[in-house]
Length: 129
Image 1 (cartoon, rainbow, N blue to C red):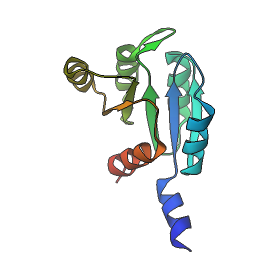
Image 2: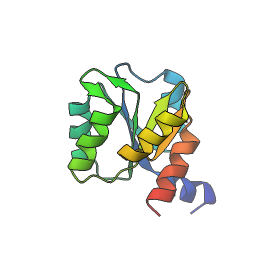
Image 3: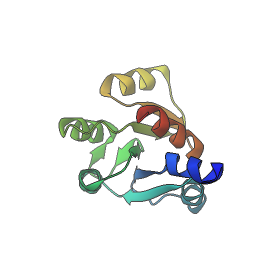
C-alpha cells in the first residue's frame, strides 16, 4: 500500500457542517480532496440525526447562529446525548470572551472562515488517536 493511500485511509472521517446555508463549493471540494465525507445539516435536529447514524470518525462544524437555535444549543444537544465528537465553531472573527465561552461550553476549536480541511484532518487525527 502506498504512503498516499495510507494517509488517506488514516484521515478518513466525516464532517457534519451545521449551518443555515450550504457550504461553499470550494470548501466542499477541499474537504473531499482531503479524504473526508461531508454532510450538511441545516439545523440542530438534522445534525443530531446524522450524528446518531455516524459510523466513522466525525467532527461537527457549526456557525454561530442556526435556524433552530445557536451553537450553544447544538453543543448542549450533542453532549447530552453522550456524543464526544469534536465540535468546531466557525466564525468570521472572535474575541477572548467568545473563546472563553466556547471552551467552557465544550467547543474543541474555533476556526476563522474560510474553513480549511487540513485543520479538520489534524483535529480528527488528534481526537481519535
